[in-house]
View (tube, rainbow, N blue to C red):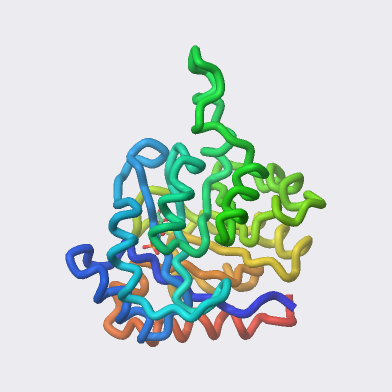
Amino acid sequence: MSPPAIIAPSILSADFAELGRACSETMAQGADWLHVDIMDGHFVPNMTFGAPVVTKVRPHVDRPAGAYGRGTFDCHMMIAEPKRWVRDFKKAGCDLYCFHYEAAVSSTAADTPEGTSSAQTSPKELIRFIHELGMQAGIAIKPKTSVDVLWDILENPVAEERPDMVLVMTVEPGFGGQSFMASELPKVTALRKRYPDMHIEVDGGLSEKTIDQAADAGANVIVAGSAVFGAADPGEVIRKLREAVDSRRGKL
Ligand SMILES: O=C(CO)[C@H](O)[C@H](O)COP(=O)(O)O
């Protein structure tokens, strides 16, 4: 059976001037995790914030110990140098460090005269490093990236080098409020077929209108920014998203 629904409101759509309060309110409204979008203006054409802000926001969320517990800080690292920031985000209170496959394998860093820089790392090495620091590891793919790049990483016999979650982007990363790309769902279906127990996250354009398609494909971790933070009753939206996913459990 697929894992239960995890609803992770994206704080990208929250009022940044009131971020701590927005996080604690969202948790009180029924969120499971908080999805924290970190953008560097290089990997994506937008910037948000870094580890110092996460450090300040973290105490506003009551978090019981244990992986994937309520209040997990699910940090979606839309950054060009994912290896560089692992330690800082661990210190800041990140629980799940989800990096982009495309950033990890980017060859630009290796093209420098000095050779390999700290920016370059293999996904397997990066996952191991994240695990060594005591965080869960996620790997994300953009819409233009084939799901086929993940099989080798997921089938690694070395457990420490396997991700705990795959994030399938259902918009081009960079901005909230974009339209859901149903064209990405076959990736979710293929992942769920091979990995019935794995956390599969979808991010971008998720709402009451699009959740059924994502749930049918097998996604269980649902990121929603504008649909939750823009709602008159965010708790009701969270409840409906959860119900859509949990009603498919055992039927996929
Ligand atoms: O990663 C993201 C953008 O890159 C956001 O998490 C995502 O777009 C959520 O916003 P919305 O639910 O409004 O689409």
